[in-house]
Every structure is written in structure tokens, then in C-alpha cells.
Image 1: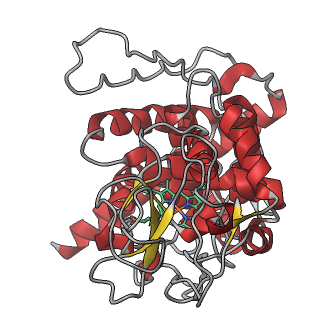
Image 2: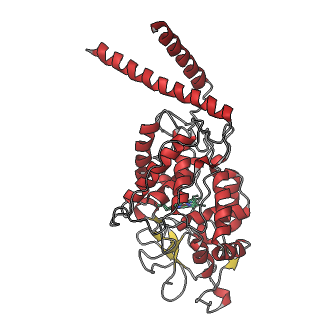
Image 3: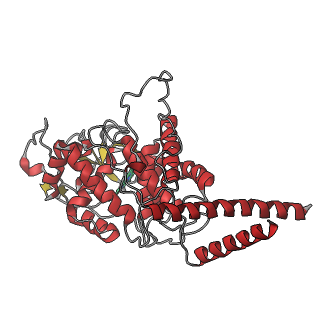
Length: 417
Ligand code: HEM
């Protein structure tokens, strides 16, 4: 018996060493994803009103995928473009520590974005989770970013060409997909302490839908300089500074806002690349259609080819959600060479009980949520018997490795006595 155990342990060590040499990442099974899915949803519900977890997870998955390291589970906390993400990373680190033998951090960050997008999407157009793949490798074992030269998109882009250029180089997106991906800004808000910008893009910051496009293309927006930014930061607000739409302070702190890069998906403007201020004699306002007819057409920024895409998305949430999901998967799958669909480690469909969704604070226990959204089932596809078998073996090996680590920790402790 002892001999058998030793042989098994040696085999496990050999497999582990081969895996680490080839940098083969752990592949989360369907059961693991199902478990983590429930935990993440419970956290999103528990923290509602405190942390904007859905928004944070979606933004984090984007930032994790920028740069040559692609989606790699590492965020450079020294890069100011990542300001505000640490609180969301802290929440995911807790989940990761509980499952580190079952999933890579890179897969967890990407999956958290997928779960959050599904949780925040509307019943009539849910974010489809069935395309999620596993197999992203971590950039380091401790989450420290080893590519300090990640370049994030600027906040002062001036036309759709600039936006598409960024997303095409980063994730291979075309113009329409770039416009679709920006709809993520229907979630969450900007905070001065993080980015120097302030305010939400839409009224309901917890819902992922196409309301963002109505704001961008169907309202009138004025450029304003951010207070205390020394003229170095500008954003767009609904209420214009009195006496024109120039580079002035004004507007309504905390009200809805757009970055120039948001406006650039529908309008062209001429700005100083660094500060976002208008160039001389280039002032304009973004003129939408609803309730705000421009006083003079000449004051309006020029519409670009994204304008009609925005109008279509604004009128058709399911179409936008379909395009958004396609662009989002391209983002999290980009430059990955080792992805595969998650497989089950059990042979029957009956797996671990599904975790229940935590009630929103203030809601009576047992009362069904207003949305009552059904969680997407990972087990709806037909399983390959061989995949399931090899995954079960991998799962057992992972469990054995965990036990081995615990034994070796105990031996180390005993040695210290
Ligand atoms: C050209 C592209 C983009 C620019 C310039 C940009 C810029 C920004 C800025 C300045 C903030 C505010 C951060 C803060 O103050 O805390 C923000 C927030 C956010 N961004 Fe983007 N972003 C871009 C693309 C994206 C993409 C592609 C996604 C996701 C797919 C995304 C998701 C979010 C979300 C959800 C928030 C809100 C986070 C929260 O509430 O904590 N953004 N973005």
C-alpha cells in the first residue's frame, strides 16, 4: 500500500513538473465554473450599494486583456490607468485563493467579466455565457504584472478611426465591434479620485444594456474643463457652460457625463490630444436628436459612420447585446492559443447543487428577485465521454497535488520544531 502511494505521488510530481515546464495551465471544469459562478453572483448581490462589482469585473477583464501579455491574470497596480481596480481585484483574490488548484487567475478574471455581464444584462437580451473557454495562463504565480508597458486607450480620442485602431490592434475588432464593445460603459461610473473624470454614463449604472447609445447619439453634450485639473482634463456634460460651449468650467457635478472617446464613436471633433481642450476655432457640441434640436447646425460636431450604428443599437437592445457579446469574447480570447471549452468531470448531468442567488439587501428572505433571472446552464451541451474522463483524471491529480502540498507544509512545520 505504502509502495503504491509512493508510486502515485511520484507520478503526480512528474505530471506536475511536466505541466509547469510546458506552462500548461490548469483547466477549470464545468463544475468549478458553476461553483464560481454562484459565488460571484452572491458577492455582486451582497455588495450592491457598496461596491459596483458587476461594473468592476467587466472593466477588470478589459484591463487584464490589454497589452502583450493578453488576458494573463496580472494587473500593473503602478499604472494610473488601472486606478480604482484594486478593490475588485481584492474580491477576486479571495475567490481565487479558494480555487487556486482548479482555475488560473487569468481564466477567473475573464470569467468574472462574463458572469458580471450576464448578471447585469436584461432579461430580454441576456449575455450568452455558453461561449466561455478556459486555458489562459497566468503571467506570474503572485499576480504581479511582468509587462510594465501596457498601453491603455486615451480618453481624448477624436473620431471612430482612432477608437477602431486601438481595438483592432489590441483584439482584432472591426469598426462595428469597436462601437459595440464601448457599450460596456452602460455599467458603473467615473470617479475623480481614480481617473480625474466624474459621473455615470447612464441613469441605471447596474444594468448592461444599450442605453449608453441613446446618451451618446441622441442628446446634446457640451465640453467642460474639470475643476482643479488645471485645464488638463475635459469631459462632456449635458448642461452647457453659460455663454457657449467652449473650454470652460460649468455643468453639474455628479451628473451624467461622457469622455471624448465615448463621443468619438459617433462624432468627429478637434481636440488637443493631451488635455482634451478644443483647438482654436474648433468648438462644437455633440448634437443628438431627441428633445434637443441644435440651435444652429453649425455648432454641432460632425457625425461619423458610427452615428448610425449608435442609433441602431439605441433602438435595438438584443441586437446590441449580440454584437457586444461577440466583441467581448474576441477580447478575452484574443492572442490565446490554448483555449478549449470547459468539460465536465462527472459523467452524469446531475452535479453539485446550484448555489442560490443572494437576495438584494432589504428584500424579504425567500422573495423572488424582481428580475428572477435564471442562471445560464453550463451543462446544456452534450458531453464528450473522453473529455470527461481525461478531465476527471486531471481533477484527481489536482486534488492529489493539493494534498501533497499540505503534507509537505506539515513536514516543513515539523522540521521547524
Ligand atoms: C477606448 C476605450 C476606453 C476608455 C478611454 C475608457 C476609459 C474609462 C475611464 C476613464 C473610466 C473611469 C475609471 C474611474 O474613474 O474609476 C472607465 C470606467 C469603466 N470602463 Fe472604460 N474605457 C474604455 C473602454 C472600456 C471597455 C472596452 C470596457 C469593457 C469591455 C470598459 C468598461 C468600463 C467599466 C465597466 C467602467 C466603470 C467601472 C466602475 O464603475 O468602477 N471600458 N473607463
